[in-house]
Image 1 (tube, chains in turn orange, blue):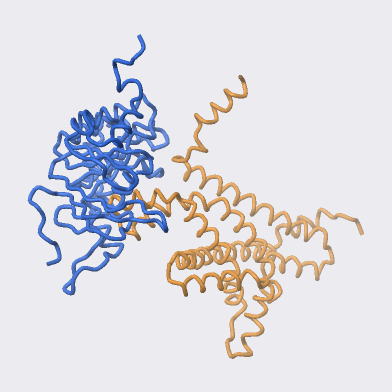
Image 2 (image 1 turned 180 degrees about the vertical axis):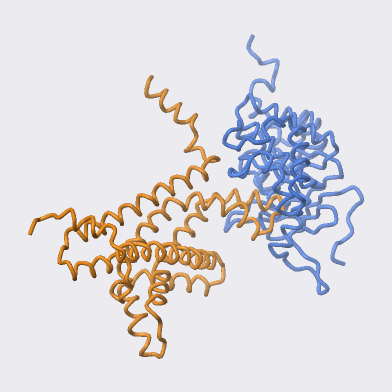
Length: 238
Length: 271
């Protein structure tokens, strides 16, 4: 048996089960990250309340979901909840688990991005008579978004990799599909190489997308301005 | 009565304002009156409380005691059938619509063009339609001589240009009074005049205004009245020519002499 078999590699690369698993990984990442952004932003907004119980809720929420491993959360949702009479399907448990475990990270990013916008921006908005909620939506949020995009890129990559954990509750995403293939062929190296390549491609595609977003978003930001680059170049020449 | 009767001529009135930050008392009982259409300069050393006075007037700061009236508004307070109570955030925002404020550091919205900055108030507060808000904003940009910079972002503008946009942004809300918080202190010397010219033009339109400034020449020529503050108190006030020309108090005299230095005593000027 050869160390590396190209025919196995290409067979695995386009295997329908692998492509189905790949698709599951993609939609699971996007759906749970989108949900985590919604939940995380809501939780971050709660944290801005001066009402003390809101603060406690925030601290507790973030502490709880960050302190427990995703693997434990997933198995808990899928296998422990039925004992309490709550039965979740594999897909439900996977979506809920990935969303909840990711949401505190999003919440912290959103919270810090909002507080990174200078207080003077709030004051300028208030001075014009802009109502607090409108100021948040139209003045603060667009600026916070610009700050939040790079760390959110990290979260996408993390979430993409975390989807592989739902294989333990028998959801057939890319990793479990690969594993299933290995059970039949016993060709571990080729199959895992295929999975690795797909994970890398997804991450690369996301990085490109993120650069596009940052460029589109950053035209009013000094750090992406062409003149500044010219000044830097001129300094180097001098 | 929720709004106590005011003298006919006072449009802005401060009654014995006290404001402290923790143990530090920034304003120790400040009272002043500004008539409709009057232009008043606030001068004094750094930390004397000039900015705090302005920030209290449009309730960016909550006062400890005293009362502030702008027109028939009791700033920061809301009338109810059971008397006055602290205004909510939304009520305070409604009051600020009629008080324009210009900051030392401009504070334009960096993600909006000059035109969008100027149109932001009417768009976001008064729900004016976009075309109407923008054509009004364009007029204001022309008025501050920046019509050609309408589509520039703040970072593409000089300090003087940004401050003129900020003035246009405040004017877009058609305020009944304008507050200028050291509007030229953060500017390069060569752009100070262009901003002062715009402020002078605002004054000439009979806007009621209060300007905290270190520009004594501007105070002398463009303000009807000058108020000298020190350590959270008004030390001297009166017609600008008097306060700046022949101050009555020793402290005001010393402040003005320190600012102008040798130039205050022309006879001592070296050849």
